[in-house]
Image (tube, rainbow, N blue to C red; front, side, top):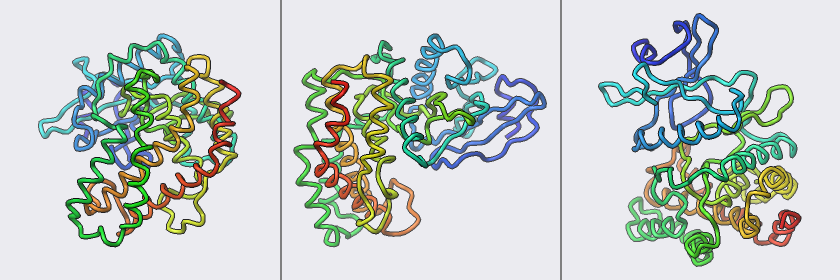
Amino acid sequence: MEKIIRRFCLDGNAVSCSRYGSGHINTTCLLETDQQHRYILQKLNTHVFGDTQGLMENIAAVTDYLRQLTPRPRRVLTIVPTLDGGLYHETDKGECWRVFEFIEGGVCLEQARNAEEFRQSGRAFGQFQKQLAEFPVERLKETIPQFHDTPNRFRQLHEAIAADKAGRLVQVQPEVDAYLACEKAAAELTDMQRAGLLPLRVCHNDAKLSNVILDAETHEPLCVIDLDTVMPGLAAYDFGDSIRYGASTAAEDEPDQSRVALSMTLYRAYAEGFLSACAERLTKAEIASLPLGAKTITLENGVRFLTDYLNGDEYYQISRSSQNLDRCRTHLTLVRDMEARWQEMQAAVAPWL
């Protein structure tokens, strides 16, 4: 580890390095030097993120652009270069390591404890959209191809059904039938984008409260972090992912489906925070598409969980054998509740149309 740390342009010599945070993909450490300067040291999961160079170039392009608009260090994620000016260090074993400045005085929350905290996360991602509205999105590489191509996720589900590798199809036929009944509607967002009705934007692609740093004292949003999945996408994708994960009344792997519903209180709070920050930079069609983004991204993730369950839990980490099945069921329940509350969801964004 010491050899790796010495490859970066740090302020002082390292005196401590310990595991940090609750992430499940990259290995994250908090690094402190004898100059009382703190950093985040990460080993990238190159199995999930195969194009390390493209990923880091995307992050650098976006953060460099944001820094021109917001020079305050706590407002933008800052990459610490290697001694030879690189964005990351690759070891002889093929491990890829990177360093970021630690954002002092900030806090990350796994779940919103109240509507105001969720509103602030909406403000953070809305500000992210507003600040990057003029960014030349064609500069970004699609490091994970077809990430939010929902029709492609359904094609993968069809392949999993045909293969039935884990022999589980017979026990989940009701879930399979329910998802396949939604397949045509799931293509609406991608069809709109391909028809030129929705513009491509800088999309975070993992928009959730834990990827926002809030000021520890005021809980005002400081900056958006974890930019590994920054790619071209739709504003509705990030809005939808936040709602899917943060506005549900239950955890995404809740076994008891009676506990799963869409919290309209949280939905309205997020919509208000998000749109108050960026509505002026979005088209009317984009604003109108946000409820559809919530439904589509929830449906898409449910399809991915069901596909992984049929494939024998190859992709997502699980702690119990039925976890992916529970995940796919909660997402289906959430989609159905969204359909029941559709007029309310549309009404929440209507003031900005």
